[in-house]
Length: 424
Image (cartoon, rainbow, N blue to C red; front, side):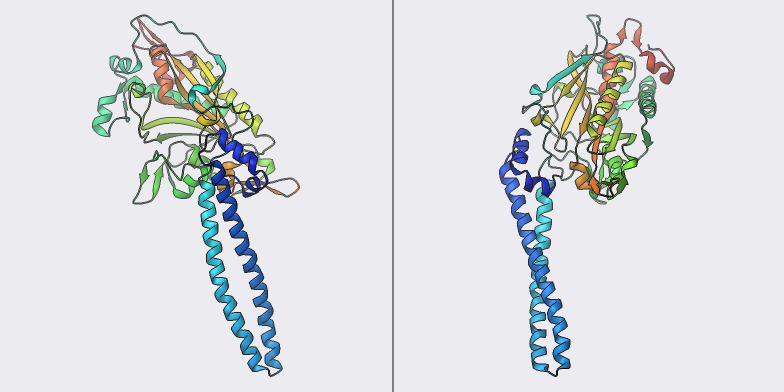
């Protein structure tokens, strides 16, 4: 969340940033935060004054009793008792203001960096780079859901029987391809200096609030109500929360972690032709890279993460493009974000496979994730993460773009992991 210091000292810049993100009621939301903070500080000031006065009066009671001024001492005791009652009301008022302020801050998104493009929808995102191998398919090329059926790789109907739509069953070489990609992505992350983490795939409420998935306005998280736990939408949540309520040493930064997990998203409201097959699932596999860094180095870390993801797509021999997301299309918590898309020749459309984001200190403020500088000052960290990579649309593109009359060709980088060169 945004810090009170930034909101109070840079009010107009914050409002302008929120408007760039197309956050409705930006000025009103900021004014509400400032008013609640004013109320909190006023109650705190009065409470501090009253406590000091109570202490002074309590000390006076002893002196009056020694002097035999019992009636005066009793009168002072009455004043102390009255102050205690007043203080109870002030404490309640202050705690309510603190709670209301926290909720108000949770409801305000991060503000975009200056370099983030203006725009409201995905159509206004800026393509900054294209690359990879061009693909030329035969006229009778099939989409991946037909290829999956033809080669008995993925059974979508069986997934519906067992669970429901959006929970496919991978079989045979389809399952082997999934496992090969997971191991390939993890090995590449390790070569780039990331430490592998195997976190839980359910998290508590504090973790959800820490990384900004809660409050979940769109209802996209699966909630285990009996235990008040949430299925993770991405490994970003448990891995970043490792550093909740932690003070790191500056020498430890940047911290680089990676994790493979299953991910769960309700994807409420998703329907139509663009969600067929693997294009949009409720459960899927993903490898995530996460960094904790200093403010001075986080932009360099972001560049390194972008280069890492691009390298994966190059090794998979897929046509790709990189988009700088406009203000209105970024996530609630991101300060800047780049999406990677691969081209599906059979579907004739781009498929998003990764988002790589810098959150500045927005998540760190929610997490209380800090570091101690060489001068022994305590500062908020910056957090970053990115998919490296999400499997479903990668699999879709690999199947579609590599289909030949002899079968589906496996990219060279994956052959050692798969154990086969062709799916036939």
